[in-house]
Image (cartoon, rainbow, N blue to C red; front, side):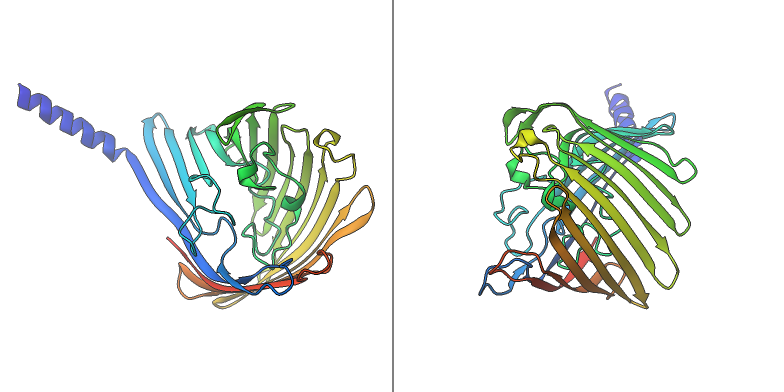
Length: 336
């Protein structure tokens, strides 16, 4: 009888394992980097943009009836130091994402800490995406932060703790919304915001067309909305985007910290090589003063399906006096 119970337990364990799946993916990169805004006399260094080196554990379990349980644990690290992500290596161990949830025919729900509904796709019109390259034209993050209570993430990190819902694809249309409670943990301490956090996007993708619109309000009552789109012409893909940031007076901005940003970019494939080019302008919408005028140029060369060499150059004529108005990087990236 004892052997029978052991055999049945082993069989049940095997069946449960057969319905579960855990995978590891991620990427690692490093190169020579000299950033825009570097102090006078500061040379290039061995580095890479924050977030570009990370590994993720992803798991799912079949619950039956078309339902699945899912989790994601993502750790971002600095290749050149082996420490945590961030210039001061002060980011949390699993700053990338920690979430658990369920999915099915209704879409998906997850709970934890992750990139917000808006911040995830807000750089999709940028030929460099949200990867922090010197040639990137995205400037939204420099004027807005999704979680101002958590200084470890830095301005514009774009992550909160909360709830997410993503709808199923409805004829090309997908809707994502997330909510965060005003009471939250920030570096282990309890922080209370003025209001609950909310973020919402609606994206339509069909053939060569992609369009996304969204809005977000953080716990400090700062608001941002964005509208962007891309069109694939075959010989090249073009993108255009516009965003508006309205920072609250309650944050000590005295009504003078509101910004608008527009940008255009293009992806130009040439065999194994991809050329990237873009331009953007950011303006203080209260004072009507341009705070950033950025041009970016980049190139990626596929050495294989998972390994690529890259180079990027950017310039911003509006950076502070005495700092470098241009920056560059050259490196290699491998995904797994």
